[in-house]
Length: 517
Image 1 (cartoon, helix red, strand yellow):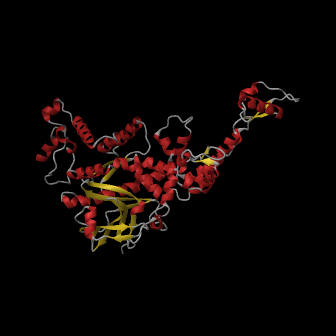
Image 2: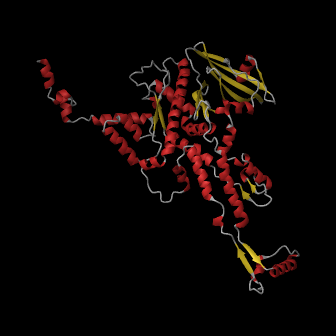
Image 3: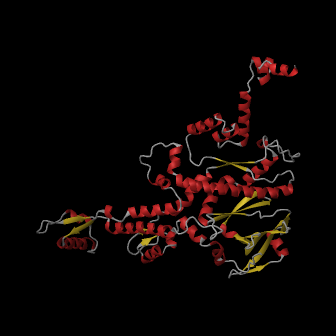
């Protein structure tokens, strides 16, 4: 049951994916375009959004629209924790199990200690620039409510590409998916549909190309026209014995009501509007009443106007220097400075209460935001103390981490399917993704923690070396393991004469003599 693409516009996107553009604006801080109270104040000239409207002058005051964008922190805090925890990607097949035939690749010292399988995984990781993608992937998945990943193999090499949610349209029967793109080719607008569908136990992938008019209505082009415009010889490919699509979709907070997931900012717009409104209203009050004002008697004011007229020919051009010489009225007053107590303006506590509600509903630790607000008195903390301060955010981040690791494994497995089509030596697998600590701790704590685990036998030497050196390359780790093993088997005069110690020669070979008898 495929999709017929007769029209593609914002209504089609919103029907499947909801208000994703609204939540993107909310995250980006484009709040003056979203909230009616802000729009009304800008139209009346009460405030000005200088970021969007430039140097537009307001009619009454020049108070900026104040934005405290808590909606930006909500997706970025878990993204920061998860992205820093993703380590190297390694094949799950040991070198003993995997024995590839002669490889035609040129010798490269970077691959000296790697199997062909690891080379392919490294190529996928390198071509995909995964190190730069983790943070953005998690933020986009949180804001949009979902993320799409798809493997590609072309002249740019085997890689994984990540797409925003609004290109993803699953088939109703669950056997296929369409990825839909607006494309401009040779100055013309087209709709490009990439379809994957399981048919008769095999996966069929196909490209469609549509002309699109001003009303966003489409007309499908013939295969010959599509091949010429797309610059490809084939539009359809069949992958035997593949019973699911290569495309992988990662939903956020998936439920039966929302099978494609929801934005982490859903239902937060009202509270974000109230925060901005309260802060901006306080700014307006301060702009109008916070500056000192001078009150003088009518007689002094008339005298100032007379002097201004004599000097400039305009009695409205009052010179403040003329106030240095004044006369007293009969009560003994000449002028008076009036200023309100600005500490009484507004209710910042109300803003903080709303912020707490937003953080509570989105499972974000309040302490994570406190790190941005106030560090006074925050002395040096151990990793354990930081863990409990950020417990709620870490629990949320751990859930996202497990889902993201599964998402990456599925994508790399799909990419290995494509690689195996060209090289039968490739094994289709879900690789191992090493994880690092989400919370930074001191080097001393790191070494003590891993050394203790190794000494107690709960952690291997290789894992210990990897965790003690999370940024080291695979080559360095293998060389370090070889050095440690060599040093642990050092030779002395006794071993040179009798060989390295074993159970038998330690017992003076008596065990072997008993067996002979």
